[in-house]
Amino acid sequence: MKLIEIKEILEAEVVSGEYDPEIEIEIGCSSDLMSEILAFGKPGSILLTSLMNIQVINTANVADIKAVCFVMGKIPDENIINLAKKNDIIVFITKFTTFESCGRLYKNGLKSCSYLNFEK
Amino acid sequence: MDNNKRTTTKIQELTYELKVKDVMTKDVETVSPKMPVNFLRDVLQNKRISGVPVVNDNEFVGLISIEDFIKCLEQGKMDDLIEDRMTKNIKTLYADEPLVHAVVKFEKFGFGRFPVISRKDKKLVGIITKSDIIKGVLKKLETAYHDEEERRYRASHIFNDIIADEVFLKFQYYVEGKNFDKAGEASTGLKKTLYRLGLSPEIVRRAAISTYEAEINVVAFTDGGIIVAYVEPHQIKIVITDKGPGIPNIENAMKPGFSTAPEWVRELGFGAGMGLPNIKKFADKMTLRSKVGKGTHLEIIVKLSNYRDED
Image: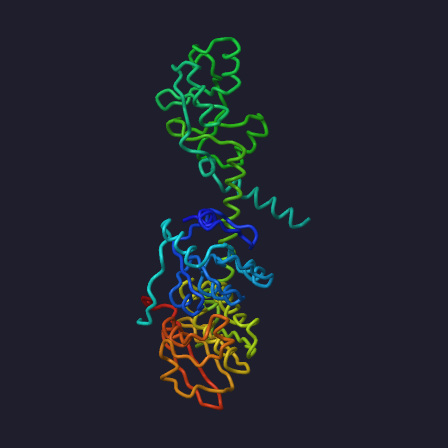
């Protein structure tokens, strides 16, 4: 699914400046626990969360997550946006809840990431 | 000024290096000489082009342009055959000519496009416009730039060039305790560094995630610590040390979901008891030693060569 489609489906706004709308995102993940994202998030995916601090961006950065969407109309502060820009992470905001945001994307064909698994 | 000169030279160099066939547009729309001019209406409109090569049995025989078409329209001669209205004896380029020949011909004749034919059988193989040349050169410049970037940072290069019985590249980071605004700076810094060394994204990701979880622990539970990463030809070793308070029961700490994190850490999205299990998941080897009141020593190893299935 292209970033521009995600933006339309979530009626979202991009707050991290210029981005390539053609970037393909195949997988979505969502949690307010960053360790869960680190454990099962996949490279190149989009992260939906209602948690809002710079560790969300750091998490996306180390886990190679391409885009972050803050839900429920929360607006990230400058520090968050600047850190995201510095690391080429695209930041969306949407007015929808986590449940509805994930539901909309899932219904439109965005895949879920794997199950949490501590086995090697 | 100097820089400008160098860029110009590089572009000139590229126009000798690139061949016409490297930048031309293939799959060209063509028409047959026996068709009526009227047929051009759809071709010119649908393809949004200003001229079409005329081809007879694959052989290039002429070019018919939008100007020719308009003339026929004015004269009401839309049923004329294309071969009677096209321009013959068109200047062409060979596919294997260096691009610089095309540049010279564009300057000399001022045409908008040149048909490209193969030297061997004179068949039409493409068409070239000025914008094809610009796009081709820019693309080549971009590729050259990426290659240069990659060559500049290549861990194997460094290891190949250094003569020693054992080589370690050492990177050290200081982690401030209890300061969540700075948490992650060490891990993201290390990640960027490893990436620049040319290590594979998968390896870099695993090293970065394990280091980040360890860094968060240092920030959340201690007054600060040190992260040292040693990059060797076969592995990355990351050592995280702090001076307290230590882990009373390592077995419990390793259980997914077990946590002693204070509320403020949980509010920040961590402290759900997954840090150490996560490190174990992403590391090839993890060694944890801790003494209450003294501090904790965590060693993470990510191997560079051996393939390990993550799931």
